[in-house]
Image (cartoon, rainbow, N blue to C red):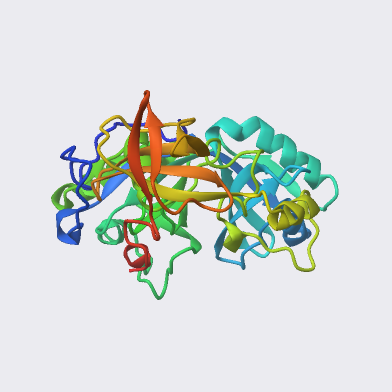
Length: 355
């Protein structure tokens, strides 16, 4: 719902709808694609207390200047209230982005926290458009419109820079929700269409195409990325969602910290895992029960067909411990065999994004 656009995904290959055979992806058969992500909520935070403000915002520490981090603001009970991508632009300024559907609640949360710090908060959602430029040829495309060195050394993964694209000053984030090399460009609203058209014109011979919300959801599932609002919500902590790497509690104070620690140590805590479902053509969605025999042991929170891997995938919460055999998922009254995936099925080493 947060990523509008066409369902097709030229440049990433067309699904053949044979969901039970895992495929290898040939990088030479993919190119570059654009998605309009302007609907994201966007907030600019400035001031001398910026890092202190960000340190109390959520469960993760703020990134360094020029870097990008992900943090989850928690409820007092330790569940996920909001998810923010945090980009530190300079010593006293950061761009925060979050889900489109969460704009008002996220602004309320940020303004309440900002009262305790010397910072200025601006909701810039309507001031900036945003374009995702993704795929193995994204660097080549952007290099045709920018004089900035976009090499991995000069512009590494999970970093942010102000650059010019098609003579327009933009905030460029090297990050990807779809598991491919790419950048998110945040552009002054009145110049967004011009940049989009320049990208289209410059990418024609590269096989440039477009992708939308369904394609993005398919690709993020192949990477096991959790989605706010379905996989991440107030009922579960980031640790229960398998995001321990984004939780830092030592010598820190933030809302929900003690509750998160208590739930992490509880014997009845939940766990999230990515599973593959066999023999089903109807994609799973929120609420399908996961069973071992007749016993319900888990719940699907999101699912869909992985266009690049040929797998039907689902993210599921389980009561600890995780089931290790004879697992099924009930979809529209029928049980289908499911297996736990030990690693994400698409590029588990993140080599495509780091290239």
